[in-house]
Image (cartoon, rainbow, N blue to C red):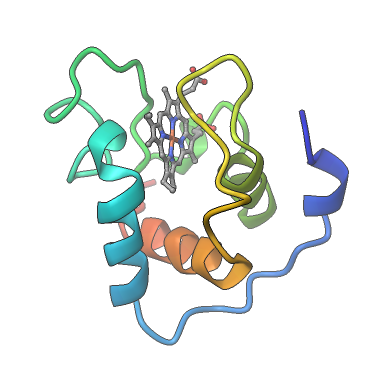
Length: 104
Ligand code: HEC
């Protein structure tokens, strides 16, 4: 996986509000992953996993793994990379928002 080594050492600094992560999710992720993070309603043709079930994440549900997925993307899929458009704190805000929706 691209970026695997560097992101193994990243540490989640926390977010003082979930609102920023929610807004970032709406602007950057909702069109594919859905308003409910489960992907089915807004984009039925897109084969995305249910992002509320961290244990089912194919590329890992730890802070470090999710950071890597968002920053570097998943090659050969519609999941692009956000290393040029999101700052590290914004990625953590997104992750902390996603964790607030976690169901497993
Ligand atoms: C253009 C559509 C699209 C956008 C926009 C998008 N994703 Fe994805 N995402 C996907 C697809 C498709 C996959 C599944 C790739 C695969 O087949 O493994 C995926 C996979 C993921 C995964 C990996 C889940 C796992 O199983 O490990 C995470 C986490 C994720 N996306 C988060 C995000 C976040 C956060 C954003 C916004 C910053 C975002 N995605 C934006 C399409 C998108």
